[in-house]
Length: 156
Image 1 (cartoon, rainbow, N blue to C red):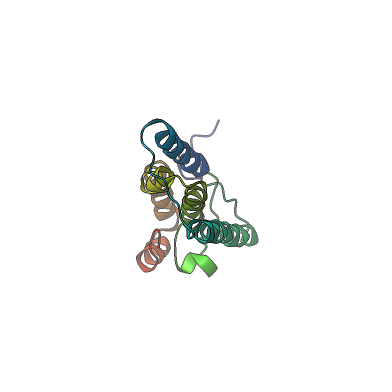
Image 2: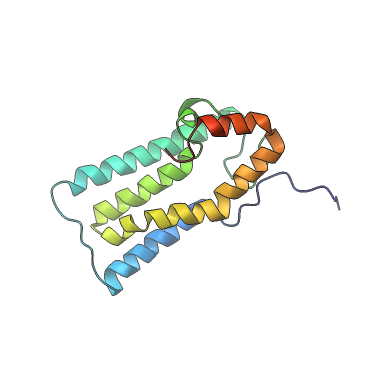
């Protein structure tokens, strides 16, 4: 058994589960507490747009990860900083994509609570994953990551 620390961020929970749990909480609030219905001709195009943009962000990020030989699971080792493509605009395109998927699902379902729980999702993902990822990347890459972090926003 090695005494060296594990190479990878100390992510507490898989981020997709955080978004799913928040969406389920929103649906529960919608059905059991008070409905915040979303309705109108705008819901179909906006919902679809959010789903498409969310899926696109995730796909672009995954493609760059795989091309650089990295695993998208945040608790796995990171051999290099990916700063190209979509990562020039956001340090967390997969999490932004998941937030857009949650928004799109809420809008299409007509459940305002699902949309309103997106900030909760992002806050919980920050607490359980992002801050640990940032700590890990700072420790592993030092100034290179700090320069990247200073030039690219966390979310958008």
